[in-house]
Length: 352
Image (cartoon, rainbow, N blue to C red; front, side):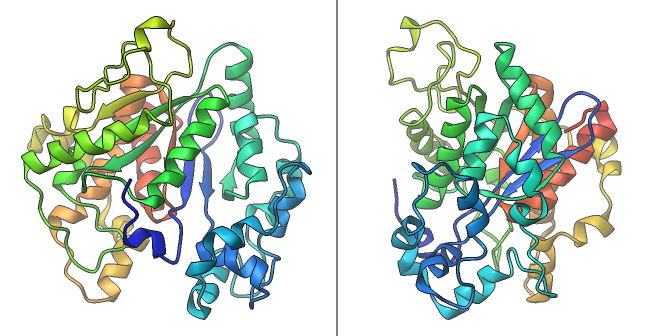
């Protein structure tokens, strides 16, 4: 696993979760915690430890390690990072907007093992309808079933960086809690390039390079997740485990899919007609990833502008094919993910 520039970045990629199912309203979880925030917890900086203290309050004595985050991420601390980290959970009027302050009662009453783990480890940052989500996760496990969740990884390099390890570990916790991880390799979206956090367009990758990168990153997940016996690592066609056939398939066995399977076969005019009407330019321009690029007066190509539509369509397609009800992703992907929930509701009447 490559420890590149991301290892020294000021923030760890954050996680978000979206829930669908039943007649309940939209449920969304966002996991967010910056490296600088962890450092500030133990360094006595301007932020002090208030931002992270609520998470520790829910943890059992054996799980509490108040100084661990500072030790792990202290190299990333700067005064600039600390200031920006404070904005993650402290509003301009000084109000603590984190879920630990706003929904403390709901967090105390969580029954889902997965949500309890996320809560105790301080990953939760924001959530709507967490009570209904907790009920869905708990009920599916008690009924001997599982809830499917996906997280996407674009094939922009032949190895994953340290930021991806956090995301993979979230999937591991999900599986250990009885739910099914769906690893989505972005073989199709890699041809477009995610504009989020970039001042300029990504370098265009050839199909051969994307295929090579897909093969490289796909091998990583088998070291952390248990895959279904009939899942032949479908994203790259390589199965180097050899032991899958010896066990029966379990409800929480992971699967790996590639969005190039459906994105590469889309008819442009049909896609625009069927799904283009569900997106408004007004709304798309309000997304943070777009606003940041425009505010910097950096070019944003029409190709990149389409990325959010494709990511939204991924959620819909995964819901149709694999009954995926949860989406995990970075907080910088919030607009794209919300678009996916809205697309599912408008096209299929799904609560995503």
